[in-house]
Image 1 (tube, rainbow, N blue to C red):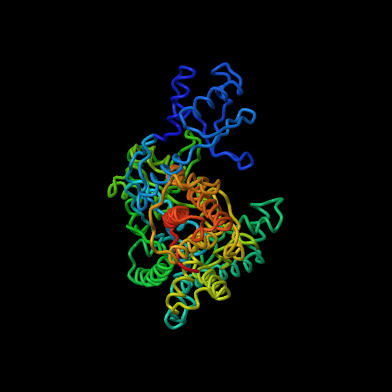
Image 2: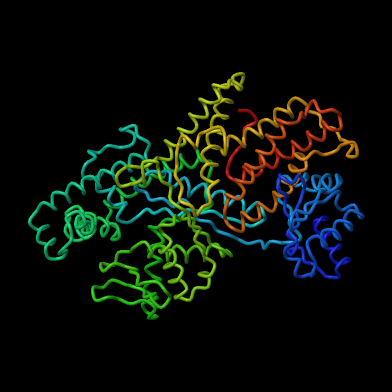
Length: 612
């Protein structure tokens, strides 16, 4: 138990004859304007003790001063602000300084260790990874590392969306218009190559649709089905129905999908070739982002199991068929809607394979929790999926969690994959590294290093800028990605935190021997006390981040810690301190701050350079 908390509990017991739980003591860092270490909020105790704040503060202050638990206090309204003695700070620092590499258990709030499976990224094989995928990947990877850091057994997975209408669009476009072109012959990265054909299909389909809109058939449908609707609204409303019922290109896609599900050799051969091009490209991007997966599932395999589950549901009467032969589930009694599970021609939809994937994963992993990292545009889909699994009576349905996150917008508006209006992950990674290279070359601080060492540093700084910019935002918030702001080397950025760490490494290189110091010879200043308090909060921040599945808690804590160290570095000399004891204490404290920064940034997936 925290000795400070224990001292207050004892004081309440002796002064007021009441037993106080630690959770009832609202002790927090004191506001800087009052120049004290901590604050105890007295509002809850005024009524409980039937005493004024002044009476409570006077009794508590005298008692705690007498037993040397505090070294001074003041009352501001109902806020009991107080300082604690030097030995408290030294003991606090020593108790946390040996915890590097692992996070000690909090005895007051023991956490339940669980086996957890996290799914993230899960891309389609019809286009390269883009900015939206980057947010997904970085969020999933960081949550994985945070959960592991507090002692959970965590496995990671992705589900490759390697079948369906979108995939067939890329395949058909290549078949019709490529002339046999390949990534090798074109010199284009292989996943980008496939993505070009997806965009090409959409372009050709839009041309076909625009031409049809000028036809008599379109005019007749417009008059009969959409009376009173203007032409622009009709164009938007009817597009999907046109694709599914009238479009020649749409008909070719449906034929290709049926051929694929019928194991047509020619279709399967093309499918395997184009998917392999994409997998090769994905692996390159994952490597650059420094992420990986323990397991990979493929929807081309799980959709079959999903069909079996649906057939079982039909036999039980859980699902039903419409007159056209399509299969549905009715979730209206559960506050949702009716949902199609399989098309009239027997081909699967997204939820078909999701049912199969969920079942297959539980059979294999037997986890306590399954986390899906997927954008918030799929919120309703996952509500339907989870309720459908509950309706089937599957126990693991209670352990599914959708970690929903907001979309990423560009300054010029929303990204649209079909139009090719996206920020490709590869291009973005290259841009931030180039910005890091430009900034470092201007400063000239690493010019003495070899070209290989310099390039490693450029990569680390660039990726720190990118990853931190994404992860400092609460997952649920929609965010605006501004490349200029993301690569800014100052302010609330990853490089600002990296710079604090690099400064400390520079200090430690100049004075390589760390000697012991005499605590009684040191009077801690306010900055030092604040730094010690902040490094001691690291464990609680990590546990909060894990509980909320939210790396932004950790990211913003690391920024505040770096900011406090920059202030300390500016205001006080470390290597030229007034005494040897003070110098070695400040080096010890700085080294501990750097270890927290390094460990915390690692949990954000960020590797720290020693120079910049």
